[in-house]
Length: 80
Image (cartoon, rainbow, N blue to C red):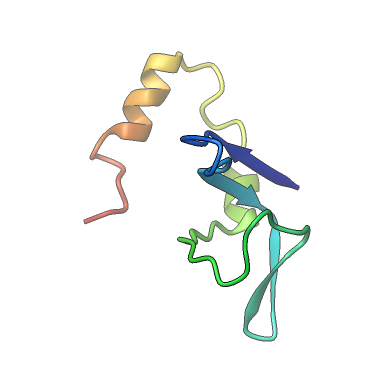
């Protein structure tokens, strides 16, 4: 499954992309073709599918404001 969002203009039709991949033989292999040019540089963020499944619905019932606070706040940031 591939999801993308927001481009800045026609030349940059894709700003962010979420794609499912599998790690095998020391490489990540996307499960679907990617809308990228050959030799294009990208920034890759890996999130284990297990982590997504284990936390699914954990924020259910919270207001959008509280969710935004949690997502954007420093308290739970993994960046130091």
